[in-house]
Length: 144
Image 1 (spheres, helix red, strand yellow):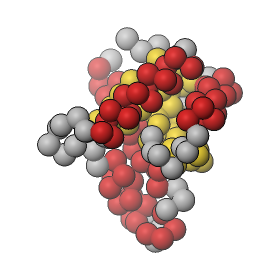
Image 2: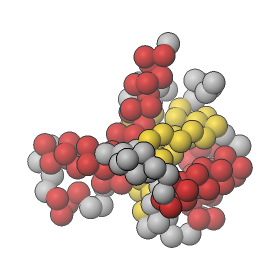
Image 3: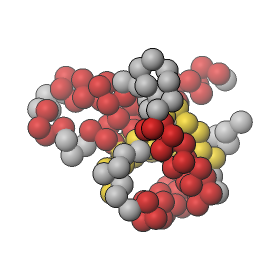
Image 4: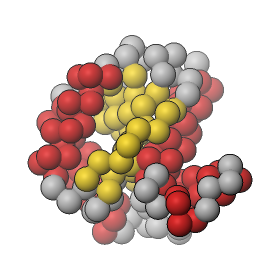
């Protein structure tokens, strides 16, 4: 069972950019943070460990990109390896959560807010991380 003290961090893991969102202390709302560089795994893990220390992160929720039919493909396997590395580096709880449609949902929400597709590129990854984290938070709230 996840420790519900501190905060949770949603991670939309990508090869180039990694979206990040952090919950509030009440575990009720997800807030996007600036995306991180995903090209250097060691630096990425260090940045997430620093974030965990400064923000009081106790749990990471990593997007698990299973295929639309539910199969585990290469992207999901990369996410599994990354989640294992993050758990080892941070000594925090790391959970995988199906992320199907999170980027689509984030783009829809940004479009509804008036943000043009071209302008979404710089923040879509963290918006997707916020959608992912919010789904996790909502599930946690229903389990109580």
